[in-house]
Length: 152
Image 1 (tube, rainbow, N blue to C red):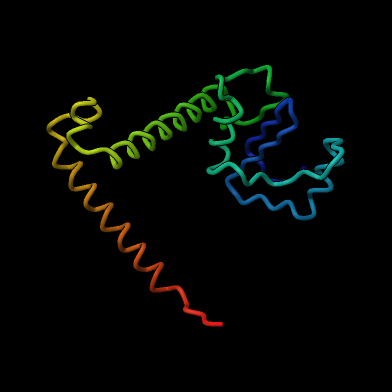
Image 2: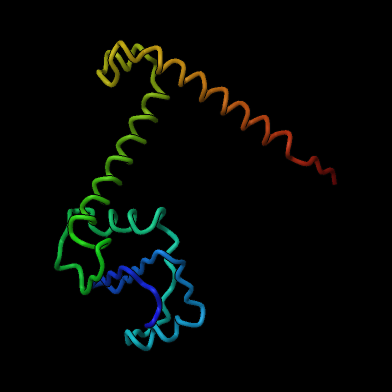
């Protein structure tokens, strides 16, 4: 393959990750890739993990980095250190999302008693909750006003 592919990772399950500083276009190259890798089926673009490749790597290595699950790796992006950093980053983001949901759903008093927040952050938390409520109301009113009334 004579494309500018900077990083490549092939897993033992047949997942192929290509990364480049330029956009990779494989419209006609898919059949070439299939024959070069001796695949039974045409490769398909993965769209279920966002952002790629971090979220795919976090899912694939959910139990930690395991070199035996890698068939081939090329380039610095798919080195052990970078993969572990990507996994750690995805886990931290998931924890933060869960914590933020909890903060928005519970009262400030409950959060203080729970130990989720400290007293010095109460003002910030209340201001943020008010801002989120305003944004949600604006989103709801925009959605309602943009609907078309259709009578049959």
